Image 1 (cartoon, rainbow, N blue to C red):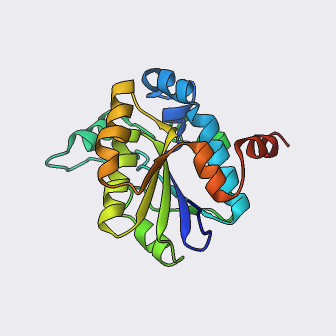
Image 2 (cartoon, helix red, strand yellow):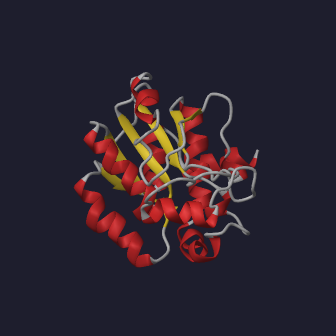
Length: 215
């Protein structure tokens, strides 16, 4: 397994404080799994390694709640309703900011915000990838059975080859993680592997990436 930087992108889904930082609305329910699998550290390693290898890093962010969102709606799905009612990822709020170690830098691509669960629907994510010749995507971020899985399913329908990174994501329970990677994931993912395996395929090691992050 090897990732060609000319045709590969790392797609990072929803790396917000809301999910990954103390004080985020979802953090209390996610903390146990995030810390057990080392999701934050592994996400940092993946982003750093991708940049170093010349692999495009693409962010697929959720819609940040803004005043007026939902006004006039005659119906809302559960995810849409939750964001609107709870003001999740509110623009300008702590929860709606990037988790600092995972913030985009020059050269990264930030796709349009998705309103639902999948990063492709109603956004320019597919355009951004295709215009760069991307054929294979490495998917990581939040959450495994939610926006990451939905983005992966949409990617399959669009013809992309998909890698799911099992320890660079999280869910509310171990059972949900198991379902995402052992039950549904094999239906659409080419590879379901850990961060160490992906780093090796990018041409680096976990130890090298940790050392680079420390500099």
